[in-house]
Length: 176
View 1 (cartoon, rainbow, N blue to C red):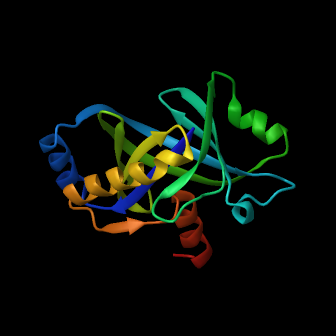
View 2 (cartoon, rainbow, N blue to C red):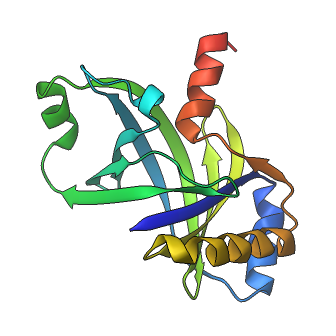
């Protein structure tokens, strides 16, 4: 499955009200911890890939994100698997090294096939992610237009191209 995603910096209280006004419904609110891993023999930052374990509500999921394609939105292959095993420990035993841990409070809103998350990310600030999954590359252009139109309707202006991991590592490397 391909994911088309655009991220913005925003004041979440304003966006929350705008979403309700546009007919979006709150699906859930949760605390999430994302642990990103680096492979011992492959530099994921160089290959533009990511391997993440997400802990939320006592559950764990593992997500592989392929290299980004397209220029108008972050579009990439995303494969997620969930299980009850101690996923983090399994990865460590396989020789993977944790690179970063990103903690966020997230609210999910949905209308039709559009998913919006309002994120308060520890150490990074407040963000809005707008996502639409598409089955194949021919649908990406329409999905990008739909996502950007919603962003405009929500008054979102400051698009963020970096992933949370990239933002986190930028701050960590600069010592801020």
